[in-house]
Length: 261
Image 1: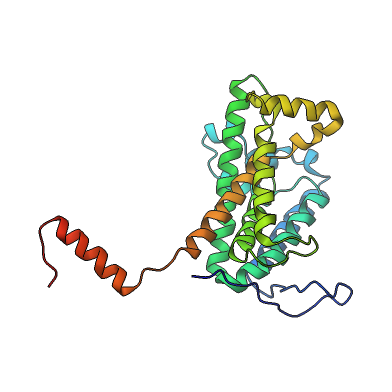
Image 2: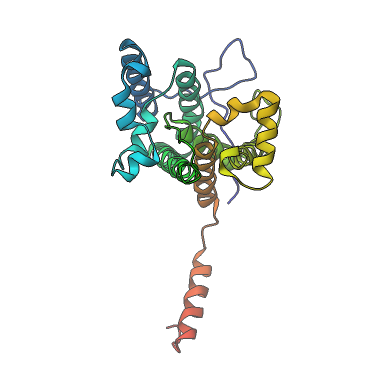
């Protein structure tokens, strides 16, 4: 089954003639965006995350919280964001990239990608937090829907690997692989994990002034990316023909001493 090409849809943004964007309408993607913006607006109206700590304690994702049976955190952490910039970047990816994914996979496929990205991203963050705690370090609370955004983006690049991903003049395949491996390496390079060679590289990066890179949950990004890649590869798997099914059936029945009728 050949990978589907990303359809070149209208409307176009006039001042970016090379960019064709399919914008979601009154649909599930827009509804999620509205919920995220409304949630963060309420938080900011209360004074910001520092003024509603209990909300972030109960809904943000931590290893300690899940160990205390706060299993809902594996989903609810995606509803909160640390600031407007964090929220706007994620919302743009959800809305613009998500619109393309909806066009290709439909609403059910889009929802499956989003939920899988949130859950797998959260699980890998929990794995990282468990290692940090066992090594005597403090864990970081995870908030934001970045895992789902990475899942949507990698789904798109995998389904249409030969399409050019504006504004970066590279193919979808190269962009997807670059993001996956960069997030993997940045995750493994976290100094507190103590992984040989990788942690040494992370410490060198910190010495060069790049310590802020490790305030980002690259484990979550990598988990979301892998979820998107796996779902897209599953969709691209060839569907067996009727002849293939008959041959497989004949081989199974031959193995148990039966003849095909």
